Length: 141
Image 1 (cartoon, rainbow, N blue to C red):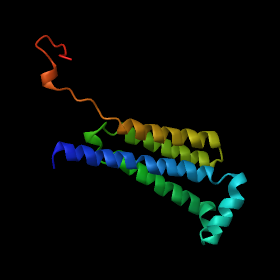
Image 2: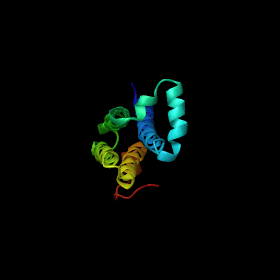
Image 3: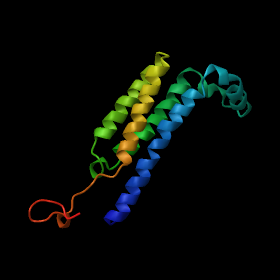
């Protein structure tokens, strides 16, 4: 596999890491008290009303966070290293704790940290090329 194909694969995995973080944010906002009747009616009609109650909610949220963290850790050495993964991990823990203690500000701060780490991980790292540097150490651009 050449570097062009590896870059495309890493880009797709990196882009996919945004989805679970955003999905967790939507999942949490979808559980607001004003939306309960509509969401409860829809989920109950398809037999999934139990998902927004207690333990099931945390399991779903943990699955989304795990998928997002996998996307940050996958081939991390080829992109930005493991720092975006660890920042995303901290964001996930903060979001779960914010949800557990029913503090929306902390929850959304954690989601913001996770999404920020995912976006940072998507930005390609600039690689220096030897052809761009002249004899004096300056660039030819």
